[in-house]
Image (cartoon, rainbow, N blue to C red; front, side, top):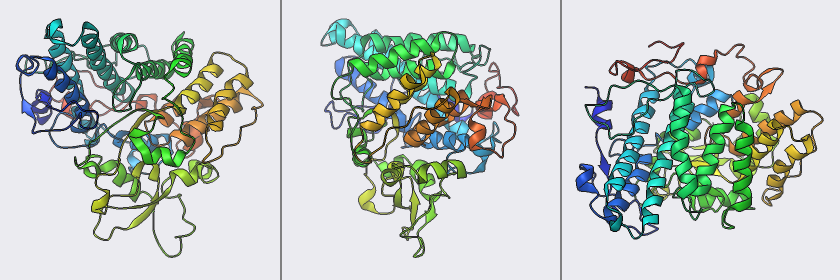
Length: 498
């Protein structure tokens, strides 16, 4: 049997302390059956902590960045923003044998398996083992929202998320074993129904935001809004706008934008602007845990030289159109800088330090706060602006959330944008703000490049003028050949080589 299946059937249970600072502390992983793993409340806490740890470990025991920023770098490349990752993603010439797809697929289903283990284990534990019935309900909602979040990315990346067709997700809600590895895909509609059922549990039962290290009610609301926005079926935009408005008006006061953008990225997961981020504990090999993310970003930039040290270019990091935008944007100084590559010489590169931080060459940087920003507060304003535009609010009403977002910053100072003259201009302005605020963080610019149109075609053609025609089938990645070669029931995505 392929390695992927040996990995998927492995249940990683992480025994952890329950303090705020060390809730993911790892001891060597144990392969335990759920009945033995969750016999009391501490076991329930541990299996939830193991679920969060799977974002870094996936289905294996070593630290990996497969649910770190790595896939989001490639989505930015596909959108025509970032050069990091090479031309395969820019040209969308990937195939089912592209190794990253097998890695993502394996590790994301490892995360699903961890969530399923938590759901099964907590459900099976008697109510009187918990501090309260409400606590059990919250923990189940946490696990189900986590599962919904992972399935959302499997939907967005490997399924035809925009179409009402048969190419949905491969849904698993049992712990994977040799008896259930062969399975068919759901339809797209069925996939959304399953994901929404999970995320609605989070909206109903998760506690309010208190830290980006854990899921919250507000993150569940934001996730559902993004699902609806990206899908764009009848009624979706109005429903998404209601959710976004609710988060903006009812969130705890502690969840807010930081006026200092530079400091926000320094603080990383400790910033109150961050709704959810991938967290790795200190002394857990953070610099290696996010591996290809920062290293790919760093070395896609311009290497330091005496000639360019005072006037560096970002042209090597970004494709021309976006490079022109970011060089003229006040956020440039807060998001770009010099970072060291992981090499004996520690060569400096000019790159997006908002993500790559100072770099990875020196041992004193090994435990820097390398993270992936799954959702930050500004994205609420960007979504609100687009959703207002899509629900026929006036142009002035639609641009207002973006200007509110910009007014929240004092470093840098972002002047208000003028009211666009037309709806086409409005949508282009919204798109540019999405790219400039969120580039390479969580894939937002890729999906916006498909949703938003200019001259009656996806605005992706503005960023990739050399790509004349893009097959819609390429909007999602191929099901990896490691899956299709062993799972005889799964149907491949159309337009690919398997």
